Image (tube, rainbow, N blue to C red; front, side):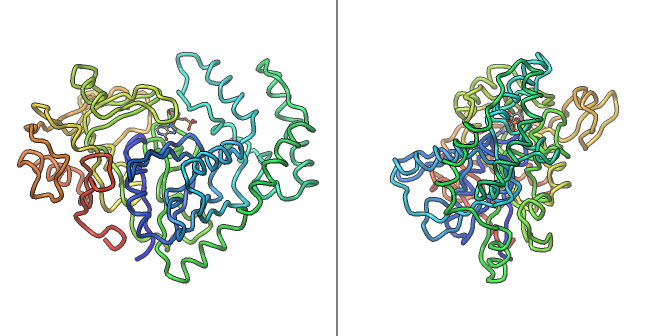
Length: 428
Ligand code: IMP
């Protein structure tokens, strides 16, 4: 029982960074398996704040192997900048492995991301504009470039030449500047020199670690509702941030996934567009946004705020096997007179407890709530469940009852020490 997936069970930003950082300390290997620098993890310890976008949270411990697996889309420039920033903060000794099968994000992906969003106008997805969608599109279209290609100059040049034939045509359709083969090639060869020591077949590495029974933590970015297949399509990201995608995105067999920890805020947030049944707009939303600093890590956009939606959590659990929950930012709700959990939706008079696949129907879902008394006591220093005020305990118990999933951790503040573990998560 050594392989654990940590995934966001809402729309991302649930505080996965804090939990993966916490669990990384007891892991041998930490793996990012999808997405790219659209993710943003903020980690705080020893009075310092670190912003990770592509790099797994095991990077702070030199004994941990950190893997960027084949399911990722990697912008080499952004990755090198992230490594430089870590260096400036004194993080210089680490083990980093980048899959030779991961997809390379190119500058034209970023240009196209912006142009497509602009064309969609008020129907835009609200992407992070990091080129994620266009990079995955090229992978599926088989004109994507792979990290391993960077190691073979001639091969990379010919792949880039082929890609540019198509991409420059597409860019000109949008009225965007076209790219010159030589200068792009030279730029990427410079990145290749710096990244070469880290590039390898990470599937081989992971399978070796599995044989050794190493503790492996798979760190999902974004959240289940942003899953390309099971999220609120089309307002999703372009990969699958759920445990079901780990085997394919890492090159391991499905039987090796032992446990899945779903991370959920004690309420709900969402950045970008798309339906959000439990969204609230009143003074309470404002209080939660300011207390919880609910602004995007990557884009600084104010996050939309809503009550805890158990229908969403149950959906995430169904499609990905979440068998335990970590409830985050519980302290942010302190001071409210009452707190709510959405148990069902009312869809045109029909009471349902699942998410309709059709966005128009999802937009029409009215939340049905159970309401609970709030608590006023400061909970930021509690170290056990029993120390929580009775109303707060009742709220957590209600979440367990309504979702049908046990809570194995909860968090009452940004520091590593403000994480209360109720159950062993690697061996649940
Ligand atoms: P993309 O991943 O940049 O293509 O953006 C697609 C959607 O996913 C948009 O609604 C983004 O706001 C959202 N998104 C992407 N990454 C994150 C994340 O790390 N946290 C929360 N939302 C995200």
